[in-house]
Image (tube, rainbow, N blue to C red):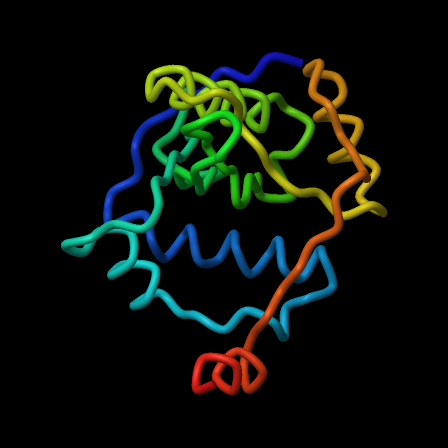
Length: 162
C-alpha cells in the first residue's frame, strides 16, 4: 500500500513525539528498560551546536501529525568511505502497514545518495520477522554474518581508565 504522506526534516518541536516513538519501539523490542536518555538529551544531541544525528519525520497527507521517524548518522568505512547508518526507523503501531515506513526508508536512501555515501546500513533483531521482510521487499540484504560488539558502563570506564 502506498501512503500519502510528507517527509520533512525534523525540528526541535518534534522531539516529544520522537521520544514517544523511541519508547514505543523499545517496548516492542522488549527493551524499554534500556532507554537511558530523555528528551533533553535528544534535543541537545540533535539540535545543539554539534548535532550527532539527522532526523526525518513522516506525516500523513491529511493531517499535521508525526506518525514515524528515521534517525540516522554518518559513519565511515575504511573500505568504502562515507556510509549512512539508520539507527532507528519506527512508525507508530496504529499507522504501520500503510506505507509510511517505506517513505521514510526511501528518504534515508535519498539522503545517503545526496551525501555521496557508498551504502546505508542498519540493524534488525533476528526475531523481528515483519521488519526483516520489509527490508527484503525493498531489495535489501539482511545478513547474519557480522556479530555486534559493545562495551558500556563500568567496563567502558574501567578500560578507559587503564
